[in-house]
Length: 235
Ligand code: ATP
Image 1 (cartoon, helix red, strand yellow):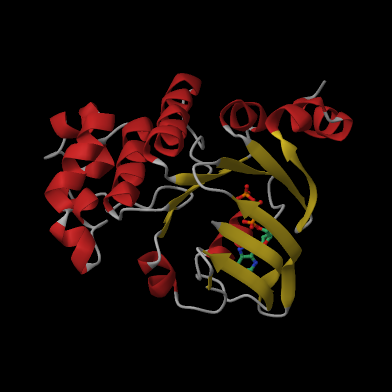
Image 2 (cartoon, rainbow, N blue to C red):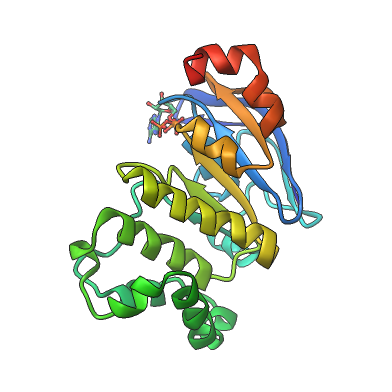
C-alpha cells in the first residue's frame, strides 16, 4: 500500500534523510527503528508532507504523494500520531478527539468513530469531560491515538508512543496498534527507540542510522541480526 523509493529530505541546507526506500503492505505493522537523532521522525514527517522531499517518491495506493501538502496526504488516509502527543491540554478529552475529524467524511462518521475509540480505550469514555492536560501520560497517549483513529486512517503512523510511559502502558498501546492492523486492516508504521518492544509487535522492521536505512528484515531476522544485537539490544 505504501512504497517509498529513494526518498531524501532535510532542513534548510542540511540533508538528513538519504535515499530511503521501504514499503508497508496491507495490514502490516512495520517498525522504523534507530537511536536518538538517527532521522526516524524526519523520515515519517517527509512521508506525511510536513517536510518536503528533495527527491524520491512516496506511492500510496498507487498514487504519487511526494510533494503534496500534508492536508492532501491526510485526505489519502495517512494519519500520524506525533511524537510528544501534542494535545490541546486545556481542552477536554472529547474536544481533543473531535479535532481528529477534519474532513466531511470523518465529521459525518464522528459519533460512530467515537464509539469505536471508546471501545478500544474505555478509560477515555469515563474521562471524556476531563481536561486532557490533567490525564496521566498513558491516557494522553490514548487520546493521541484515538484522535488519529477518528481521522479514519488507512495507514497509522505512531511516532515513539513509548516516550515517557510505564512499560505496561506501552504494551497496552502497542497491543491496540497491533489489533488495528490485524483486526481492522489499518496498516501501522511504528517509530521506536525501544527496539525490543517494537520487534515484539511488528511484522517487519527497518533500521535507520545517520539518515540511511541500513538494515531491513522480519522481526525475527532483525532480532537475530548480530549488528542489531550488539548495537541496540545490548546482547
Ligand atoms: P529521536 O528519536 O530523538 O526523535 P529521530 O531518529 O526521530 O530521533 P530526528 O528527530 O529525525 O531523529 O532528527 C534527525 C536529525 O535532524 C537530528 O540531527 C536533528 O538535530 C535534526 N533536526 C530535527 N528537526 C530539525 C529541525 N526542525 N531543524 C533542523 N534540524 C532538525
